[in-house]
Length: 116
Image (cartoon, rainbow, N blue to C red; front, side, top):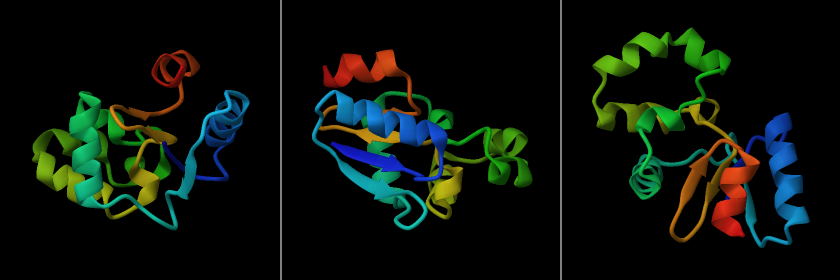
């Protein structure tokens, strides 16, 4: 599994510790140093089956600065992928990518169902 995190984020730290406690094998990736590409985001979004908005860090400063709450509705999916690929701080984290699933954000129950 690929665990995409921002190491300074307390939720990411909690999720990483939770994965370790489950004995899960995973690779860590810093979302700021190695931001997901447009192609990765598109593939993960499709694999997740979730609305694209779930991949945005809606509580982040960058999201608010760019006033994306209103702007996203007017953007195509392609434009949204492009935007997400420009800055890791726009992407919801942590992001857990498995062979047959992708989960943005950390909800212990949701993660337990997928990796358990």
